[in-house]
Length: 285
Image 1: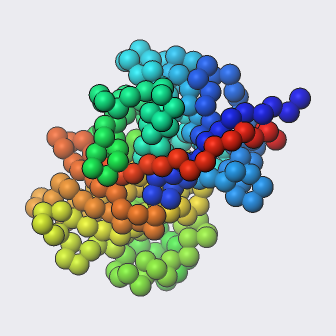
Image 2: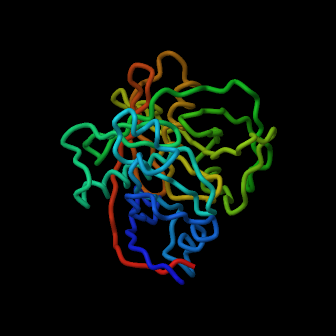
C-alpha cells in the first residue's frame, strides 16, 4: 500500500532540503526512496533529506537524548547515504522546528546529529551553529578536477564530517572548474570527503575580517550552491595557511549567498540564513 507523508521544502543559501516530519520515528526511508524524493525531475528535488525525529525515538539519538536534546537531525544525502552533519541543513532544521512550534530559539537550542549535539542560536545573518572543535589533517592529499590541468594539494579539515580544501590561483580558475564530475582524491579517504575550492579575497583581510570565495562538490550529492560545514572548513584551511596573524572572523561567498564563520576558544561557529519555501504531501515510491 503506497504511503503518503507530509513534507516541507527549505534551503540555506541555496543548499536545499526535503524536510520530513517523523517525530515518533515511524518512518524507515530506504536509500531509493530518499533518492526519489530528492530527484529534481521526478521528485520534490533537494540536495538531501532532513528527517525531523525526536532523539529518544531513534537509536542514533540515544546520547543526544541523554544530554537533553529533544530533537535529532537524521540527515541523508541525495543518493540516500547517511551523513554526519550538515551546516546549512541544521539551520533549516532549527528554522523548521521554530516555525512549526516544536521548539524555541529564545534560548540556545541543542540538536542531535551523527556528529554529536550541536547548539543553535539566533544571529544577525539568521542562525548560528556551534560546530565544535575541528581537526587539521596533515596527511598529503592530491586533488584532480576537471578544468584544472595539474593536480593540486588539498588540506584535510574535519568539522564533524570530512573535507579537503584546495586553493586556486584566480577567480577565472574558480569559474572554469567543471564540477559535474567528482574530483579525484589521491589517496581516496575511506569514507570520502567533500571537496572545497577556494580563492582569497584581495585583500584577504578587511576590517579584521577575512574573506574568500568557494565552490564545493559534496559527496553523495555533487556540486551544490552552498555547503555549511564546507564553508567552515574552507575558512579554517585558509586561516591555517595564513598563519598566526590570521583573523578569527571570516565571510565566505558561495554561489548561493554569503555565510559567516567565527573561531572562538578552539571552536568554529557558522552563521547564515534559513528559509522554508513550500510544503505539501507526497506518496513514497
